[in-house]
Amino acid sequence: MEQALPQDEKLSALLNTQNEHLKKLNEIVAKSIQEEQLLTTNLLNPPTETITRGQKLSDKIAQFGGSWMFIISFLTILMVWIVYNVTASPKDIFDPYPFILMNLLLSCIAAIQAPIIMMSQNRKEEKDRKRAENDYMVNLKAELEIRSLHAKIDLLIQEQIKTLYDFQVTQMEQLQKLTADIDKNNIK
Image (cartoon, rainbow, N blue to C red; front, side, top):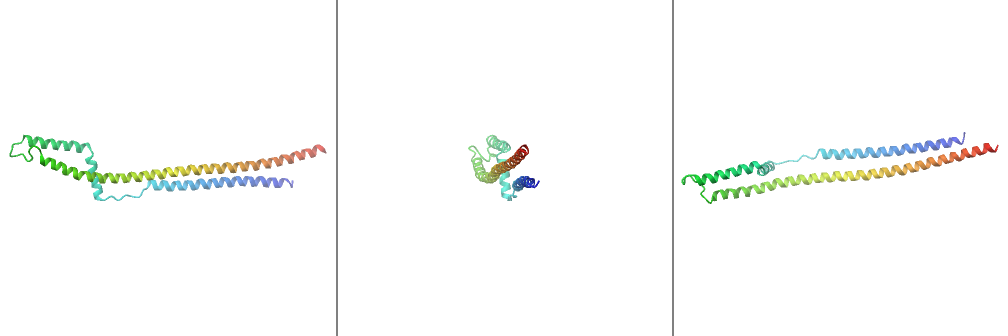
């Protein structure tokens, strides 16, 4: 019985080692979950963007200037302008044919509208850049998680192989002891 005690202690030590491995893995998983929650919180609650009145106005003008409503209303106004100046009596015409006033107004509208649309596009481009940075962060986090998983699996496999080897050594020792005991009993 005295020799059985060290074997029991050895088995207990092996089981404790297995429990320590599981605790390590649980700690690694808990840490990964905490880091993922931090990243998720940052992505779901981005810092608020302050927009000036001019930026809001440029966004609305760009939105309207790039719509079918703008095109249809603008063509309607131009057609009314041309029809009126062609069909009205000579004393009521305010812009006779070649429509110099209309060309001047069109040039002014284009000159003002182009920079306003560019301002709006620049803001949208900045938003897209931030969105791309967030996508990159998510992809980087996923890559780090995959690497972490590989490391965890490698660690788990190494520790399991060591534990299995230790169990096999213990089993072999017990088998040798049993074989020796059987041989002793057979000799007597």
